[in-house]
Length: 348
Ligand code: ATP
Ligand code: MG
Ligand code: MG
Picture (spheres, protein in one colour):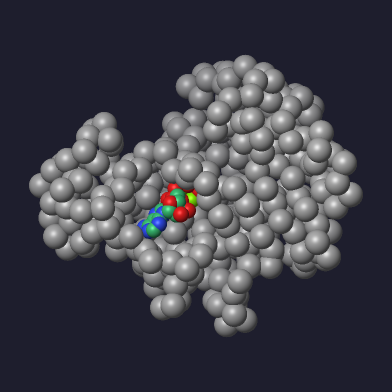
């Protein structure tokens, strides 16, 4: 069996490790922080910083292929790792998705619809963008945002100054507010040979900027579902992508609008653990090791719900429900806003 290196020791790295060991692979986690959730299940953990050249080299040489659970890996670290072992998904997917400006530019280049957007560097460019795009709008940092962090909403042009102050000098983009009816995502995979398989689109509800539930099947007409599959395959092919990707979409009367892409397994794909024979984590491991992909077929309807912070108090009660599968991440400390686990409620 191959040895798989995983950059990042959070819950996604943990669930990737579990899936990999089920297939007989050995996993090695690279994570700067102490006591990573993935460290409890992986075969090996390296605790080192992303600028530690010796640690990166030793990590790369200990595995056959390198993958990751988050997209903000420093470029210099990737250069060092790639000198020794293949990184899957590849560098182009990472560079495109690390920055909302390059991401949206890339998506538009494929002919896909995005929210109207503009590069913001200062008050002048923000005022010009508001002139062009209008309000309501959302100002977002170009890099490092997740769970709705690094965003400021502009109800009216008068909100410009405080919104820009919220960015704290970080490069940003302004996005026109999309008047969507609901949000869906599609989890897609592409193999080394170019084979593509998609899971059924899920419908996502956010609370306080954090994913709350994913419901499968999503409310989509057959033509919209086809559109979601085709656009995901289009994105994967354009990047010569290998692995699982999450594509977040807004559903509007005028069609599907791409919000963002994540070059990794995705929270909105956790339902596949109890809805499909091959879940997104196994699918990703299959893709990066050159195995054939699962076909993505759903055997059950599922509602996935995240357990955030004090939601963990619900675990004893949830553990008694017969249609509920619990997935807990082994995080020692409960904190407000921290993803502690999730559960999948199977309905058919
Ligand atoms: P994630 O945790 O999914 O990576 P994020 O911090 O990258 O989130 P986005 O996905 O860009 O943030 O935005 C979070 C949520 O805010 C979206 O799911 C959507 O509900 C809302 N939102 C973002 N951009 C827009 C927009 N242009 N128009 C309307 N709503 C938006
Ligand atoms: Mg995001
Ligand atoms: Mg998002």
